[in-house]
Length: 131
Image (cartoon, rainbow, N blue to C red; front, top):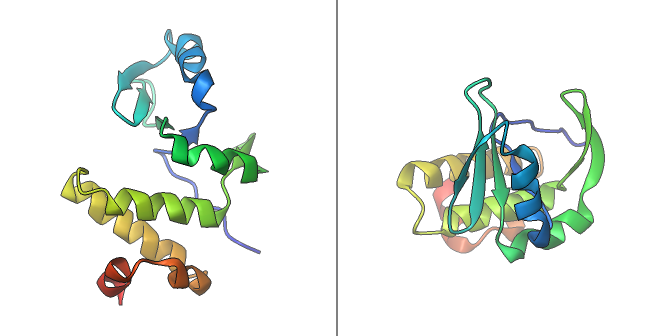
């Protein structure tokens, strides 16, 4: 059985056409910050920070997601292969801050350790960084 990893800064996928509707629903409860490839939701009432991914390449993740109970809520969770792919994309994005890319690299290592088959999917440049 695979482990379920939970974060206080989850990335949430919403069908691309539904992002504005989600923002409208939460606007009274969350601060909304828009970026080129995401929308960030936060509140001073909690440490929870939600990032809505808006890049189209993530949309297939929604199809493969499976329902799990996370912190008492039933929700669809991306499969480990998709989480891994998202981390590879994030780490490979040279426009991201170096500190964010280092966190992405650490997340890749955490995903590969219990599931070594994922290492076979790593681009050579990343594989060299973690060997």
